[in-house]
Length: 92
Ligand SMILES: [Zn+2]
Image (tube, rainbow, N blue to C red; front, side, top):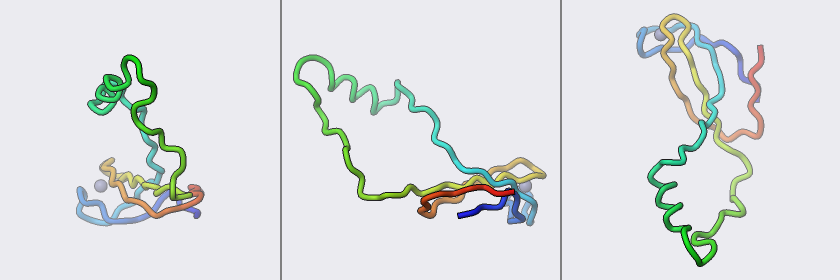
């Protein structure tokens, strides 16, 4: 699906329609000190091999894409989620 680079839409901070720049959300790097990761590391310690099953296959073939709308006047960013897309490209 082709996504326009800019779009005029409602900004909740400006409380009116304004020009927004669109981009795709990208996941950040996982924190190695997050609670789940610490718990997992503790469980994996010592003898006994793999403690939790590794996920090998997923049911879905696509991922939900989150769009970021950044207001050009105030800089406020809205996240709009997700339709499942094979490919999302931002066109000029
Ligand atoms: Zn705004």
